[in-house]
Image (cartoon, rainbow over all chains, first blue to last red; front, side):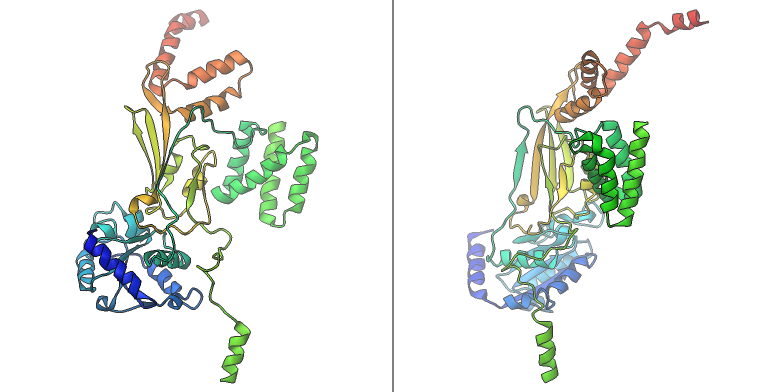
Length: 241
Length: 182
C-alpha cells in the first residue's frame, strides 16, 4: 500500500464516525456468510448501533465486504464493484473462502481468496464467522479494537517428550475402551465417555474400582451415557478375566 | 401504543452487549483450534483428516525438520483434527476473535526434529513420534532387555526393517528346518 492510499484511508477512518456504509459482494459463496451478515444486523447483535448499514450499491459504499471463494465467473463483477466504489475504501475479506478459498481452495474454477483480485485490509476467518466475529472484524477494520492473533512458530526443544494420556491404565485396555466408546457414540462423544470412565479407573485406591464404576453409572443422568459406561464396564471385566 | 409499550417493557433489551462485554458463547461452540506443540507427536493424523487442508505437514530432510502448520484462514472449524488426535494435542476453543489485518498472522507453525534410522541413517519419521511409539511398545515387554530390544527396533525405518527380517530368516536356514521337521 502506498503512503498516499494509507493517508487517505486514515482520513476516511477519522471522519467516518458512525456512518459506515457496507456493500456486500458475493463472489461465489454458499450463502452461509450472507446469513451470518444478516444475523449481525438483527436486533440481537444490532450492528446499526455503530452506524453500520448495508447498502444496495457499491457507489454508496465505504466498506466492501467480499464473501465467497472468487469463482472464475464472478471475478469481473467483483473487480467492477471495487472500481465503482468511491476512493478511499476499505476492503474486508469475509469467511474462510474469502480469506484463502477455504474448503474450495483447489477447485478448478476458483481463484482462491479475495486478495487475488483486490487489495484487502482486514480478513475475517470463520466458516461462517459468527455475528460476534463479524462485529469484532468490523471494529478492527475501523480501528476500534486491537488484533489478537499473531503469527507464531514453535521450535521443538531439547528432550521434549509427550506424556501418555492415562499412564495408570494399561495401553491395551485404553485402546479397547476407546474403540468401544467410539463405536457407540462417535469420535467426539465417545472420547468424552472413555475419558470419564478411565478417570474412574485411574483414581487412587484400586481396590474400590468396582464401586467407583457403579457410582459413575448410577450418577449419570443421561441414559445413553449410562448405557455406554455399562458396556465399557463389560469390556473392562472381560479384559480382567 | 400503550399495548406496544407494555410489550417492550415485558421483553426488555434483546441486544447483546458485545463488544462492550464478553460475548455469550453457547456450550459446544466450535472456535479456534488450539495446538499444544509439547503434546504433539507430529504423526500427521490431523493433516490427513482436515477436509479443507488448513493443516499441513512439510518434511525438510536436508534440515532434519518436519513443520506442522495451521492456517486459520482456511480452517472450517469442523473439529476433525480434535477427533483424530491420538495424544489430545489439538482441541477446539471458544475463541472467535480471529480477524487480522496481515494474512500471515493467521498461520501458526510448529517445527519438529526428524529421527534417523539406526541401520541406514536416513530420516524416516518425527523423533517424538518414534520415542512415543517405542515407549508404548516397550511397556508390553517382560524384561528390561526385551524392552531395550523393542525400543531399538522402533528406531529402524520400514525399509531396513524388511531387509533385517529377510536376513534374520535367511540366518535361521528355513530349508534345513523344514527337512528336520519332516
